[in-house]
Image 1 (cartoon, rainbow, N blue to C red):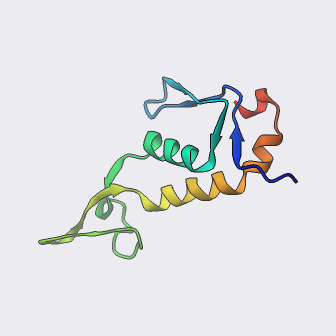
Image 2: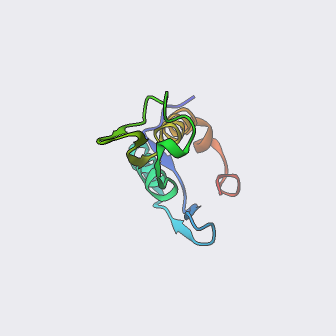
Length: 102
């Protein structure tokens, strides 16, 4: 397969976090820009101790002065999943027709 540096989005849109509105993306975007856009649009800040994995998650950060609480951050696990999905699926995505991309 051909190695692309860009996602060829051809005017596709993504759902915003509220699930109602859509954000129009440029016709071609770099992989890093797409990862940043999806991470900023879809990830909320969360306190890791509320997740249940805060005690052993490598992304969780302790909150100084509060031994049982973690800092409020964007979930590193979900961020990593988005990053891996985008970087691994670029060739397949670019081979799709517009209707399938949307």
